[in-house]
View 1 (cartoon, rainbow over the protein chains, first blue to last red):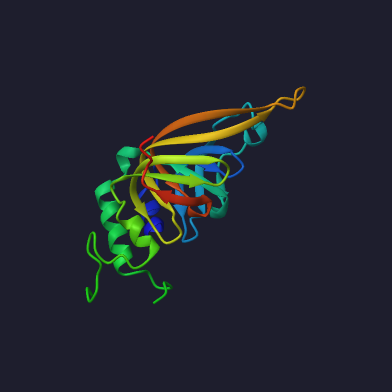
View 2 (cartoon, each protein chain N blue to C red):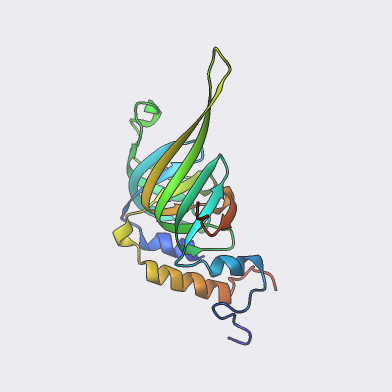
Length: 99
Length: 99
């Protein structure tokens, strides 16, 4: 839930999503869901020489499970808030956690 | 709420508590696909999804020479200011080695 809420705060920001097949796509984050599926708008494949297959594609939906990394705009990330949230999430594990 | 809420440095009951102690510290993360990351841990969850800051990624690529069948090991380094890492690729998390 932590990262779902976190990504919701980044909607509208430019991000680069790197997939497990090495394809990297830059675009504006449109929406995220609980599985961390991601919708991007205005997309551009980072290495178009190598991956020319999506030149005409303007926006896309990325299944969360195929994501390796998401590169984020550092100034839009409140690291103190994130660390607090991570500590709190540990103390009261989200529903579904054991014990 | 805090009947036995673990405090910093105390209450190490499960492996993830060790990760909690690394919040705001630089860590080493070994990933699938011969990838390694070093960066400052800002957030994590139970899947080991993470947000790292000032990240250096090291990718080890083994090129096999077609003719001589010689294996040439190539190390690629990349840097990123702020990176979300999906937990399913994580093999281990540890403090960075001094080396």
